[in-house]
Every structure is written in structure tokens, then in C-alpha cells.
Amino acid sequence: MAWLSVFSAMFWLVFPQTLALAVGVRDTLIGMALAAVVIAVPAAIVVPYAARTGTSLAMFSRRLMGYWGGALVSLLVAVTAVYYCAFETSIIAIAFHEHVGTLPLPAWYLLAVVVAVGLAFGGVRVWLDKFNAWLLPVYVIGIAAAVIWAIAEYGYDSDWIDYMPAEPVTTAGPGWVLSFSGYLSQLIFIMFMWDFARMSRTEDAKFHSRVTFGLPFWLVTFVLNGLAGLFLAQTIDVQGAFSETSAVFALIALMGFAGVLLVWVTQSRINTTNFYVASLNLQAFGSRALRWFQPRYVWAAIVGVLVYVLMLADVIGFLLTALNYQTVFVAAWVAIACVHIIRSRNAPSSASADEFRPGRVRLLNPAGLVSWLSSAFVGVLLLALTDDFGATWAVPIVIVLAALLYAALDRVQPPHKAILIRPDDPRAQVDDEWAARIKCARCHRSYVAYEMDCDPSNEGRPICSQCGDTTPGFYRQSAAEAEARDREEPDPEPAA
Image (tube, rainbow, N blue to C red; front, side):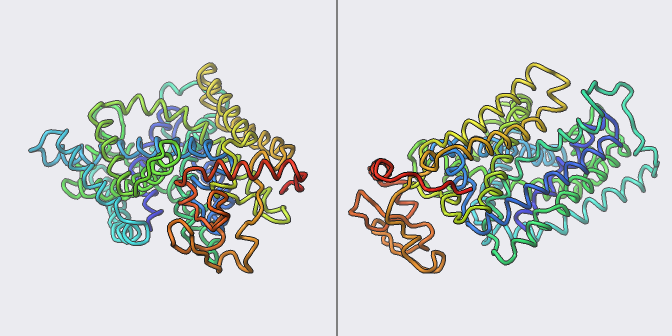
């Protein structure tokens, strides 16, 4: 239920209208349907892996990019989520300001941020799951009511599906390719879903990969919402250019306070995901890059401050442009992650492919970083220099390029360039690394052997991942131990 908040954003109703104004309704529908099918593919790859390993997005990215390279991934996701927080929270404030008035808009901004941060304090299973379950019927009934209300108010005209702009934009290919590429920008939600899928039970992973995070979810999110948005956009009389803000005004004009309630439900649901992902990944970045270790609720409050500043600064338009460029970085990461997971399936042992412990990953993984940054750089050049061609083809090109580069580089790169190969692994010292628990000699808490390590800075005693992140000298001595081993022994066979 916490994850299903994603499909209730008003963005999904408005985004297809933006594309329809460029290439027409039919090409928009073709592009969104194809994108739903394509995005379901990496979801089917990522979800079972996240459920099996239980690793967060930040932990997994350590293996792909290295300890410091993974911090860059966390920062990318956090910045993107903060933007979505600012965008969606501003919609709530605008709706209440439009209907209720009384307070100035900045005051509504502040109130909306405070409520959103408060909702994000709870964990996924304890609070967000239940909160979104309560609001799900309100959203479904509200959208259905809006469609029926619009038909009753304005009548039904089937010409809406044949809409074509008077001057379609120039594209480097069929119009549906532009729509398809536009929806591929939502690959960021593959990264978002990781931190939800990792909490699922392994026995439910197949169902979640096929349904909860799979094709049915993307068809409902893209196509069903898109059809409702396109119909409402062509039916409701809206003054001025159609945008997410004008859609809010239209719903309020059509439904009154019920429209305000619908806006609050849609945006509050999606904001629980936005704030949760932003705070989780900002926490991961802050702990590694800034060495500042704070609980997630502290980072949720920091996200709230950042969001409020962005809303007051009115830089949403600038950030929207920045997100277009962030998309190529996201698409490259998704392609690399899928290749890594698929290759790990063919390994005799997936231990090295699943590695995330701070004392057993390199600071930088050349294969992952070179593949990611070079393919993303190509995408940035295409967007910046080729206009129509870049807007149409940059994301598909980046996906293919990143996948091929990582598959080639990871195959030829020696294992010790990506991980620290060290002796005395607690995983190998127990019969079942998921059932056996080992007490950490630093914090004196017990964790499953899968996430435990030995501490060369403390006579080889057990150490948990969190203490490994925070203990001075741990990584330095772990790296020294691995270097000594590399000089004495040849590399083992590559994992895949």
C-alpha cells in the first residue's frame, strides 16, 4: 500500500496532456503503453533480487559503483525525490489557498510541508502502509467521480481521442517515440521501488515482481490515469495553458471542497513515498560523504526544510529542466543494475555479486563508474546539442550503451578491482547465513551473519555493517588486509 501511493499522483493525469499537446492523443497513448511494458522488465529483474538480499538501494549501489560511487547514486535519488516533494507539496498548498484563502500562499506552503514531514516520520510497515490503504478508496472513488461529474457537466464527445495539435512538435521519428521516451523518464521509480521491494517476503517476490511492481501496476499508473487525464483535459473548460496547477483549479471549480480533498489525497499519498525515499537516500549520502550519522526522522526534517526553501524560491521551472538531464543518469544506472543482477544469476556463488559490507567493497568500482558516467555523458551531449534527436532518442540510446559497456567491462575487470577479497568471512563460518546471528563486538547487538564482517582493527572480532561505517580505521585496515592477500594469492575466477 505504501508503494501503491505512486499511482495516485496528479502528475499522471497531467503529464500525458503535455505530450498530447506535442504529438496528439493517439501517439501519446501508444508511447505510454509501450513504456509501461518496458519499465515492467527491469521491475521484474530488480524486485526478486531486492527481496532476496534485503539490501537498500544505497547498499546495492556500493557494489555497482564502489563505496564512494554509491554515495553519488544516493545523492542523485535524494535530489530527484526532493524535487518531487517540492512539486507535489506545492500543489496541496495551492489547492487550499485557492479554495480557502485566508492565509498567504507561503503560509500554506509551510503548513503543507509540516504535515508532509510528519507523515514521513513513520516507517513503511508501521504507518505509511496503513495510511495509504485508508486513502486508496478515496482516490479511486474521487477520480471516477471527477470523470462522471465532467460528463454530467459538459457532456461526452468522443472526438477527444482524435485530438491533434494544430502545430505538432518536430520529432526525429514517429510521434509515439517522443511519448515513449518521455515516459521512460519515470525509470527513477525503479530506484524508488527498491527500498520498498526489499521489505517483501521472498516467497511473495514472484507475485510482487509481476503484479505489485509489475505490468498491471504500470498499466494502471500510466494508461488508466493517462486516459482519465486526457479526457478531463479535453472536457473541462480550463482557462489558459493546461498544467498541473490549472488542473487543480479545474477540479476545484468542478467539485468544490470535494476537489480540494481529492487533491490532498492524491498528493499526500505520493508525498509519503517522495519524503520517505528522499530522507532514506539523503541519510545514506550524509553518513558516507559527510560522516554525519543521524536517524531517518532527522533527515526527513532536513528534507522538509529543503523543500520549503525550494517552494519559496520558485525554482521549480529550473529544476524541471535539470530533471531532464538527471533522467539519463537514472536510465544508465537501471541498465547497469539489470545487467549486474542477470550476470550474478549465472555465478557459481553470488556472494561477491551481492557484496555490500563496508569492509569488503572498494571505494570506487571502475567498471560500474565508467559505464555509468560515460553513457550518461553521451546522453547529456545528445540532449544539449541535438535538440529534436536528443529529446526523442537520448534515453533509449543511453540504456543500450550503459548495458553493453558494463557487460563488457565487468567481464574483463579482475574481481579485486570491485571488492576487497579478505579472509575470515562470517558468512562462510555458519551453516545458514540468514538464520545464524552473530553479536557485534562494537555495539553488542546481534545481526544475521549475512551482514556481519570481521574487524581487523579489533583483533578480527565480529562487526556489523553500521559499526563498519562509523568505526575509524576499519576500512583502512580492511583494505590493507585485502592488499596483502592480493599479493599472496591470485584472483579467484570471476563471479560471472
